[in-house]
Image (cartoon, rainbow, N blue to C red; front, side, top):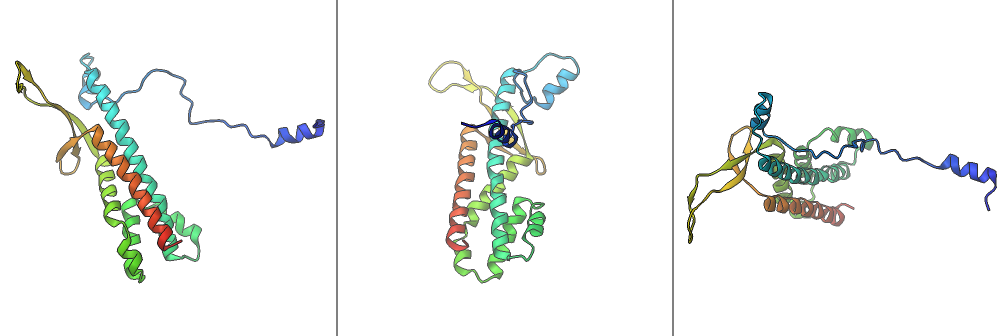
Length: 208
C-alpha cells in the first residue's frame, strides 16, 4: 500500500488534460448560408430556404473531409523529400518544407527522383494517383458551390412534371462549373486514402 509520500509523488506526476479547443457548450446547430440568403437576412427579408441550407451544410461538411484527408499527404511527401535529399540539418529543412503546399512538395519529389538516378523508384512512383488527388483537393478547396434548379419537364411514364435540383462546384478563376454529389465526394475521400496508402507502400519498398 502506498504511503503519504508515494501518494504525493503520484499526484505530482499526474497530468490534467484540458481540451481547450472544445469550448462550445451550445447545442444550437451550425449551418452554412448562401450569399443570397445572407443578403436577404441583412435586409430583414425572411426568405431562407432551410432545405437548401441543410443540403449546403451536408455537402460542405463532406467536402471538408476530403480536403482534410488529402492534406495528410503533405507530411508523408515532406518525409520523402528529406529521405531523398539527406540534408545536413534536417530540422531546418523540415521547417522550410512545412511552408510548402502539397503541389510544390510533389513537384520536388518528382524532380529528386529524376535527377537522383532512382530508376526503379521513379518508374513505380504513384504520380498519377497523387496528382489526381492534388487536383481534386485544389478544386474543392478553391471552388464555391451553388444550388441550381432546372426547368420543369414532363415526367416519363406518368402525369405531371419533374424538376432537377443539383449542386454545382464553380471554379472561382474560370467560372466553369461541374456537378458535385455526396457519392462523388465519398469516392474522392476513398481516393485520397488510397493515394496515401500507395505512397506509403512505395516509400516502404524503395526508401526505407
